[in-house]
Image 1 (cartoon, protein in one colour):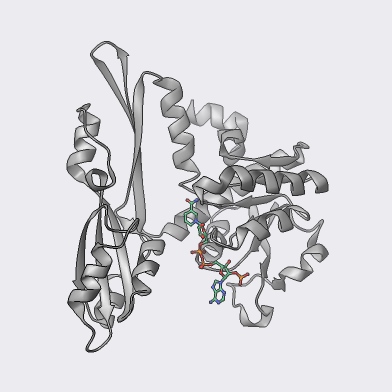
Image 2 (cartoon, rainbow, N blue to C red):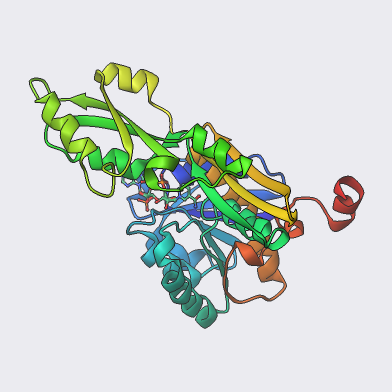
Length: 323
Ligand code: NDP
């Protein structure tokens, strides 16, 4: 049995908890939180304060760091690697190289293994980008995200004066997806690849025209995209936009000979982004525990993980079932 800890109990922590329950070879032994443990209600596992992590050394095979990438993980990653084999889903792409270095130093000092930036993007999508390019070196890759909710864009709308709540969906532009697959010479700009649909609850008496203009003209977030704004009631937002779906597609288009095309695609349609990300993090936890048991030390990425280590099946079973 692989003994698992969850560090940080938000959406992703709960997703990982649900995923552990679906894996017979893994058990959740403790949830760590920065909050008062008495205020954190899990589905059954005991809760300990993060300051008590040291008490769990030797009782945990892998710790799943489920904090947020914006501020939590840069502290949580190195701190937890001092005690345990760890897995996280750090997703600030531009900062991954320096995050890898910081976690690597902490993990090596403690003789632990730390598998960073798992999940689906980065994570499974990263693996598929490498695979597509390796088998089709003469070609091009692209990623389309959505349909799905972007928490960052939803938060940006909520900061506008007069906005009570908001949900932002990122949607791929279907014509561009089709043109890319077809091999057309299509420009891949923000506007040609994705559009943004916003559902906004405004305060009573708020200037709706001003709010809409502030959204569609917001630099970096919306100005470079075709954006729609729909005002809804709080009840409508809760009833029709309450979920956290997401997904996307990694595509590799190449040629195996002049004029002979090959397309590789990997597609995700996720009813719950944290639910699925938690499922990936748990499978990565199995792999990390096995790699650590073989004596591997230091930071690792998904590129170091084998399919055999991710799978609950033995090598013999895998050869018989899936080759
Ligand atoms: P949340 O905001 O739900 O949780 C982040 C942390 O906030 C938790 O670990 C928890 O820490 C704390 N927290 C949660 N709920 C409360 C509360 N009610 N009151 C006070 N504190 C609370 O973030 P998510 O779980 O949705 O996402 C975590 C990260 O997962 C994201 O930042 C993103 O980087 C990553 N992610 C990665 C993906 C990938 O494909 N690689 C995909 C999706 C997400 P504590 O218990 O210690 O208080």
